[in-house]
Every structure is written in C-alpha cells, then in structure tokens.
Amino acid sequence: MSDHTASVTPSSTPGSQKTVANLLSEMSAEMAEFDVFFRNTKSSPGKASRLALEEAEQDLVRRSGENLLGILTKLQCACECSTVDAYTEKVFTDVANSWKDEKETTRFQKAMTDFIPSFWPKALQKK
Image (tube, rainbow, N blue to C red; front, side, top):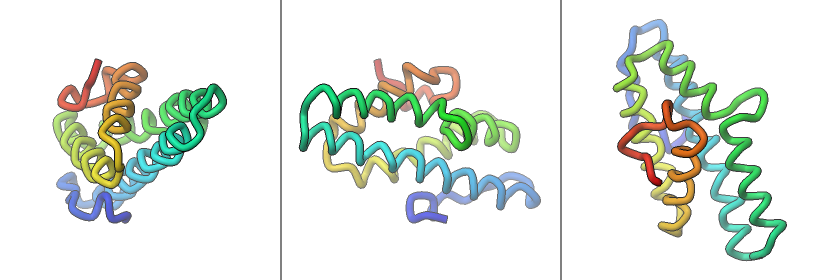
C-alpha cells in the first residue's frame, strides 16, 4: 500500500479488506498522476500542456482499464457509500498535501466534480 493510503484502515468484512486496501492504493496512484500534468502546465504554459492536462483529467476518470470511476464503483460494491466517501476524502487529502499549489487541488476537485458528480464525495465537490 502506498504512503497515501497507509493511514486508511478498511473496516469492511475481513475477506474484502485486502481488496479495499488495494483499491485505495490504486486510487492514490491515480490521483498522484495528476500532479505531473499540472506542474507541466505551470513550467511550460501553452496550448499543448493545457490540452494534456485536460486529457489527463478525462483519462483519470474514463480511460479503459484502471480509472477513478471504476475504483469508486468497486469500492461501493464492498463498502457503504458513506465509507467510500470517507476513504476518498482521506486519500485525496493525503495526495493533495503533497501538491505544492492550492490551485492544483482546486482544479482537481473541480474536474472530478464535473466528470463524476454522483461518485465524487460532496465534501470535496467544487464548482
């Protein structure tokens, strides 16, 4: 499990604890990828880096294979929605604490609010 999820203790049934922990680790890794694209737009401003950031936001949610929407959906199969929200809030907070720019945190929250409003925790939603 990554450092970002080390303090999140899955409280679901014993058989699914490993699955939940793995999903939280994947969630952390997916969110952490955003930082590279955001920093690129800061260091190399322009249309190409802005488009790469926008594509990264969409890919994070929709790309085939592992994506944030899939992870959240799988977590909802293993946990109560309120538990999934609490896990997501904790993982996001841990990941966002490593980001250097408050604008990055807000940008990420806005993107997730736009792309997956029904799955993104209300406490993290930004308009």
